[in-house]
Amino acid sequence: MRLLPIIAALCAAPLVALDVSGLEPEAHIAGPTLREKDLKGKVVAVEDWGVNCPICKNSLPQMGKLAKSLAKDSRVVFVGSHVQRRDDATARALLEKAGCDYPVYQGFRVAGAPTSSAIPFAYVVDHRGEVVWSGNPASEHKAFAKAIADAAKAVPTPIPGSLLDGMEVRFAKDMPRRLVIGRNVEGALQQLRARARRGGEAGAEAEAIVARCEAWADETEAAIREALPTCPSKALALGRDYLRTFPTRAASLKAEFAALAKDPALQPLLLSRQTLARLRATPAKTANARKAALARAQMQLRRLDGLAAQGAPEADLADLRAEWQALIAELGAE
Image (cartoon, rainbow, N blue to C red):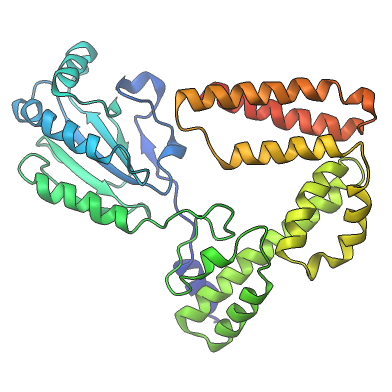
């Protein structure tokens, strides 16, 4: 039995999405709202508490200060879980008085996390979905805060456009920055293939990284060839990234890309797709930023209405319009 694929799967697994309960809109009590995707790849610190627990109420100001100190750290999400009989009015009053403005839900729980009949009780889940600390956050406050800080330090720094986004890398630490869409990655992949031939855990990881990059290339080329007949601006937008990232593999498509780039009817569509890609690459984190992004998306959608008369391919235009409408729906749902 060959072990390399098994080792590769273990050492280069993608970041997990947490299995949680109590995050439904109707369970929300106070603070910002959360979605499951907001927790993916993050350190999640959870405090179980109740409005009828004297120790819980006394420790709320301490929890509020800790949450505020973490608010600017995008690697961490602090969640309050109310576990006694629900009393939203009392809970909100206590939270406001204590200066707590973090998300609080009724009965929020991460699947597999420890529980305790005594509250307050807290636990820390790292970006891999593993519980790294649990205990009493009032009497063990320093240990709670340290566990959060230590777990945050271990979260990989996101690199925009990296082909290894969401992949844990233990050995080839330089590769997430070298394997970026829009840069020639072929030399780096040659080095990784050489490491893979040497075997061991580092070789297994190298093999998994190569497989990830080749999968992206295969999927991108398939999408380009599918789009060429009906959505040429989409094919051209994908092709520019593909040609820069895998110039040797993409060489057979270079002539078609050059011909498409000369078509004046495609230029407005291509510019619109590039604007769409930039908006998707920089998610709006505040209400004002979402409002600005929504206004920009709506303006782009209106501009598309005037391109049909200028000879833009109908199917291409419809595809692009659908993508802008999907982004507008996402921004409106935030």
